[in-house]
Length: 347
Length: 74
Image (cartoon, rainbow over all chains, first blue to last red; front, side, top):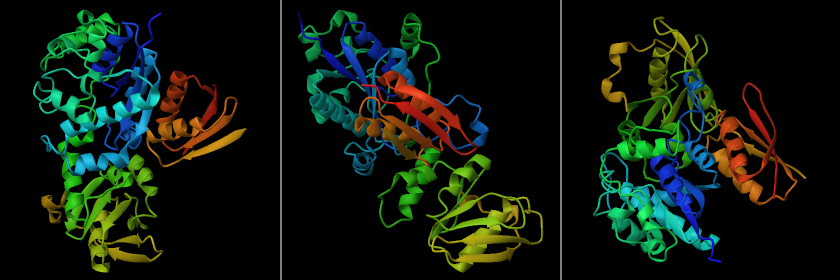
């Protein structure tokens, strides 16, 4: 009896990895999924914060895919290791702060480590040649194989017929004739295959599954780095970039102003890490202050924060500024006028 | 044996990752209570349990917290 071959599939939660996995499952291969959490995954911290999103279906699409496929999924925290990928990408960034080619190489490398540790035979991904401008071009796809060390253990079932044979094909573990020849940016073949497999309700995230492809998010990340002595970051920093209005009225500090109840609630969890402002005389948002804040800065920040509260048209509102060391200021300020807030202050 | 995992203030998928890592250290029959503040955990942690064969005994929510009680299955 021939050995049961095993593959690990990089499951992002999108359609391509879902289809690629099903194609290989249909060839009798035992497949388990792997999903790497970098801290920038859209899958993660978007739906949990804003109250206005509470009615939306909350699901992790990688888990959803695994359940649809009937496979196990291993979610792996790579936040620390990923820092080097983001901070020092050998192949540079895409349109925003997305180091897509280095990122894919990193993930395949991690998958290679995983298959060695877990006695699996090969790796599959949902990549399609020509699909994405950076990591899924004909010239760059071999780079991922080479730099990850995976070589011909990396099989891309959706476009395998357009690529050189891999070990699983040569060894007859999978039948190359039953693999596919997708290419280019069109999504029609994927949608047709999804229909054939009767997959419905799959995720179609615009811009992929990573915040780093988002301009607004990337701008905030760059601003954070530019105003710190180091580009190092923690997961909490990444969370803060996703929440609130970010206003930098001064080079030495930034305000993060909650936009609605859900964000205020979420930000409350960070009051022991940042100085924060709230109004004691009127309803209004919670504002966190990131940076070094003098009493003069605190007054300016209070005036700005008051602008976003219900006392915005009053002559005077009372604001409390509290610091992580226990210091507290109670100050009465006139809310800043709308036209006094420079557009340049918004990050 | 009963265990508790504090996954408060974490956003998904961190509660799932912590649950997964904690369960690796437990034995079949152990019961784990996961406490989260991310309401998304109510969907994600049971989904992870279903695909990995563990049994969700109970879920409950309060205004601020979500509780998921899991029996570890071999």
